[in-house]
Image 1 (spheres, rainbow, N blue to C red):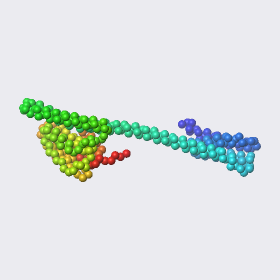
Image 2: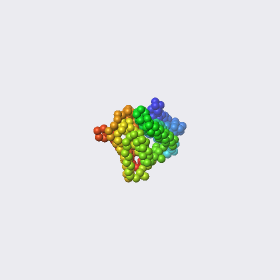
Image 3: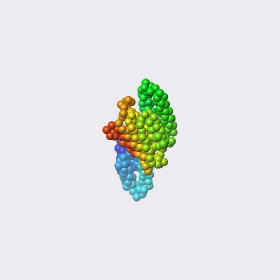
Length: 331
């Protein structure tokens, strides 16, 4: 930085020195032809000067030195030949300085782009981790909630109604198989680097509801409209919405009646899960809160919205709006 800051003064000093030497030699009547080389070098340095005003002043001193030599020594009114070489080298220095400035700007932009690329890579990794965590939460939490509910019911039935214990274990086994299948699909999604399950469709809502109904949760399901316009990616989000809503009902409102509504309208998909007052105390404890957070992020990513809150005095409601088609990717 010190060397660069002193360069304009060095150029000005050189130009002033050459001007004084040329003027002194001219006044003394001595030969000044050799000074043309010095004038050319100073003109080139003036063109390359990092400060444009300093370069212009230095070049002006070079031109003044040539004018003095012409007036005092040659006086032949033919100054053009003496100007050609210094002027050419001055503009050559200007071109070289501009080229270096452009190269410096490009290098700076390359550093900025590299920093942005690294930041984007870190952000992408964080997003992928959050997406995987949300998928694992939806799959595992739903299956484990049903298995815990059935295991608790099996403990009570083993004493009072041992004949029904086998049914409880059947439900636990079905939930385990469903969780295994969901994990296999999740592994396939990660291997394909896809943001949604291409095989997902709204018909799978019935399977999720049937599995939850088998655990003893009284569920009413209503599906209406034409679901053919719903993309696989958004159908996948809808399935996760239903799964999260039923998991919350199992966890926080055991025995409560649950109403699941899926309405496929032109251009959009509306879903609602409403449960009434629980008939038994919650036995699974409080959750981490990641389910609704992850679901809200999912819906936001596909252009949808989520509303969740109390319904009536003791109930709970979850409602979602999802566009039928997945939004186009943006840069």
